[in-house]
Structure formats: C-alpha cells, structure tokens
Length: 209
Image 1 (tube, rainbow, N blue to C red):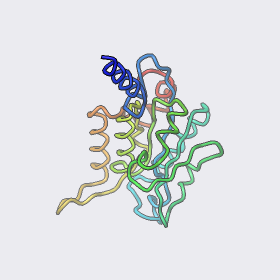
Image 2 (image 1 turned 120 degrees about the vertical axis):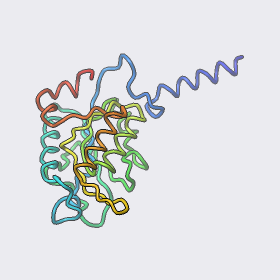
Image 3 (image 1 turned 180 degrees about the vertical axis):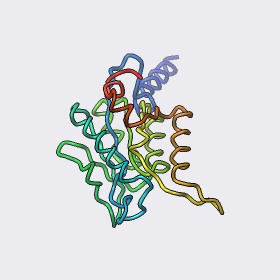
C-alpha cells in the first residue's frame, strides 16, 4: 500500500510539470511570450524560396514584436541553421536581452532549450508567428499545445508557399488557410488576425482567452 501511495504521488508530481502537458493550470496567472519562428532571409525574395506574402508577413511580424517590446514581455527568436540566408529578417532582429535559439529540426522544441527556458520564465501562453506556416510554424504550435501552453497564432504574420503533391499544385493561399484551419478547429491554437491583435493586445497577452 505504501509503495502504491508513493508511486501515485510521484506520478501526480510529474503531471504538474509543463513537460507533461500542464504548463497552464486553473488559477494560474497568465504569462505570455512571443515566439518568432524562422523569419529569416532565405524565405524572402532574392535570398531563397520567396514565400507568398513574405514581405508583408515580415512587416506584420515586426509590428507584433513592437507591441511585446513596448509591454516589456518575453520574446523568443528561433532560427533554422542554414548556410545561406541564415540571418533574421530586418523587421524582427533580436535586441539585447531577448532569447535566441538556433535549431536543426522542424520542431522548435526538439533538441533545443526552448521548453526549459519557457519553464524558467514561468510562461504558460505563447503568441506564435513565423514561417513556413505549414512546417516550422505548425510544428511549434502543435508541440507547444502538447506541452500545455495556450497558443495564439497571428495568421497574417505567417507565410508559406505553393506545394506540389503528385500532379496537383496546391496554392500557397490554400496551404496557409488549411494549416491554420486545422490548428484552430483541432483545438491547437486560437487563430487571429493582426488587426484583432493590435486592436486589443492586452486581451491576448494578459487576459483569459
């Protein structure tokens, strides 16, 4: 009986950790971080893939970043290791004191210290923006949700490209929309527009959703 009780207590203790998907628990105060995923030169015209609406998405991302800085909230920049186009886009350049993570996998949490950093900062909500919508952005949202973070995605601060499957060409706008629809309808994130965010940023940073 003692062994069973000890085992149960250890299990319950583990469940209280974000690594088991309980970063946000009832009664917790809200602490939000902005996670900027792979807004790097190689996704912009002249440097690499040239995603559809990349320039506008980069500008929008800069506006979101400005809000987080004005409100003195946590900002995390994630970049993918690359030989060309590795630099952050000029609208989202990190400043002193902001966390920078370099990854080699699609998932921003995999083989990085992102989860540990967010735990140390007591973060339980993520506002996530970045590129590509259907790849690294989606992977970060799904992983963040599975670790227990509340996730908010700002749709027009993300961008993607046309994809080919067999003989079919799937247009970037459809890739973008279907990915965001899956995240929203599947309960992984709340998906909003830049205008929604800018009109009431405190609602998405400090208030219960």
